[in-house]
Amino acid sequence: MTTRRQFLRGSVAAGAAAVTSSFISRSAYAAGRDEIRVGLIGCGGRGSDAAMNNVLAAAENVKIVSLGDVFKEPIDRLRRSLTSKFGKDKVDIPDERVHVGLDAYEKVINDDVNYVILATPPGFRPLHLEAAVKAGRHIFTEKPVCVDGPGYRRCLKAYEEAKTKKLGIVAGTQRRHQAGYLDTIRRIHDGAIGEIVSARCYWNGGDIWFKERLPGMTDVAYHCYNWYHFLWTCGDHIVEQHIHNIDVINWAMQALPVRATGMGGRSRRDPSDPRERPDPRVAGQIFDHFAVEFTYPNGVVLNSYCRQITGCDGNISEALVGTKGRAQVNEYQINGKRVFQGREQNPYIQEHTDLIESIRRGEPLNELKTVADSSLTAIMGRMATYTGREVTWDEAANSDVDTYPKNLTWDMSLEVAPAPIPGSGQRRRPRRS
Image (cartoon, rainbow, N blue to C red; front, side):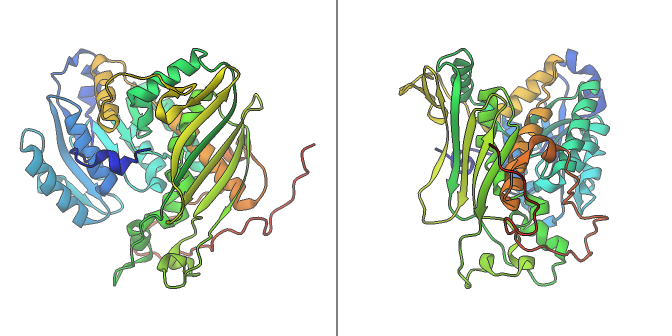
């Protein structure tokens, strides 16, 4: 299965987007004439890719006009790259629309933009979604959109407000904009494999990147710089990465799981590797493997596996078993036969195309609840694994465990909890009969 990074090799890609209230009010009549003025929040690898995808998604009247990040270096690099590739017709980023710091998101949203791209580490997503919706901006948001229960609830409120304001929101769960997936899932919903009786999905790959702390970095700067390794910024890889596969199963099932049980941990023990040092202030807390059993309302079980360990076999896929056959969804196969024969478009561009076209039709897409639900599904699996006990949907959705630091400032000290130890200090639940 091709990964996001592999898919993007050889094609132009980057990320940013924003839209003004005048565009919102006139979008039903724009017919492609109104300019979409894009602001990008988060100029790292994913944000840079998303900005370029956005420019390539529309033939005319789309312009990147504002950039924001907590670090200046990625902004400068992306600004040069965008200007070089696309020129002034597509890129207009003067110094006054370049913003650095924890409040950069507010400044981008309040620039002359009508479409924003949210591509910061996931822990910031609920805050940024709230602000963009409040300001009346159309949004392309990377996944996941939350890393804990409080963040999930904030997303649901933003979803309702966006519906009222008729704002478009599309998420980076790009399989929902990928022609082969769309065709295969449609056939499954039409009964091609009968009633689904079991499911499994995987994102088993190699180690994730790690960055050494630079001299003079504050705790918050280091966490943002090395964001994949800290719970509050990342949510762990079951949430940040495996959400793609979990989302496909939710989509196919047309339902959400009601409970989860899981196991996992940190299996690597190489003291020479900074990621494996016992000090969580250096290595963070995330696990390197999860195995979770999700149960849906009809009793169907999803076996979900994700792993980030180099040297092991890889598998990125989704599969279903039904009363009339089987589907290997990622290969567009039903009962061993490839069913999709059409032309595949780049889904990372297509997701922006779909959002822009829906805005210009006056029928803006709003995927926020869908991606929030899949984010919470993964969060529920993480909670079950971290605690070593069954966790229900309601427990995850109503959890008061807020991982976002209180009164966050750039210079504050951050305590970092050790990696979770399943079963330690957790109350026992009665076994199910």
